[in-house]
Length: 336
Image (cartoon, rainbow, N blue to C red):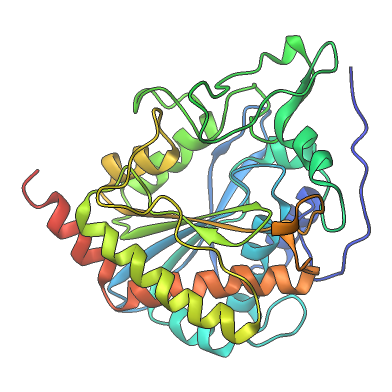
């Protein structure tokens, strides 16, 4: 059964529609080097861009669209691409501080890791109920029930057989495989994640910023990372708090921090890439703008959500320019 995906009106600078993203990458990318790194489970292309800088010591990767029901992550990366290509984002804003930092790093970007999930979800959830987003996140069984979606659950859903579903939600790829969780570090079941991992393995990356979206802004103390990384994330939090406060955007405390942070009982992509590619992984959750919980207030508009993501990227790149990821990587992996 095919379920119709309603689309909503969004500003012209909010580029999260999958067809629109592909058109932009084909028509407007001139400075970036395009890499077709694989295809999704439904044969949609996975397209990464590379922006090399001569003599840049730091090599970073920024990912959008891990989850299809988080459209803001895609528009965040596409506004970054516009900044790199034209010197301004899609609405014409200059973001001078971020652009100056970007000139000092060798950057890779992947606008949409999970195009199958993005293709079946609306382009925005601003002004919608949180329950609406939950349907698109989770998917529906054949009897119409919503699957549970909880990243901290002791029994997360790793797979939804498309034959048993009315609708496979954005947390999965088109084959029904959960795009960001698994029971072990090996094998990598999602073909999209496997393609990105193979692409990243030989790029000598220092760190990855993986963009996500929920009701409010926050970042994770990635709980699969060793002690040398903990102060780096605390530095990220301290600097981000200052910048978010200057803009009047709320930023929640660093999630999962502790001595030591307690890891979940399963593995995220952060664990896979950290162990295999020997790098730091940062996960940032931006706002969806949906309604249904007082903690989601004040409700952001589309422009504010973009600025939230660009602010998170600015701090991410800044720490890379300072060599903080490289030092933590060296300390962690030098004896292995």
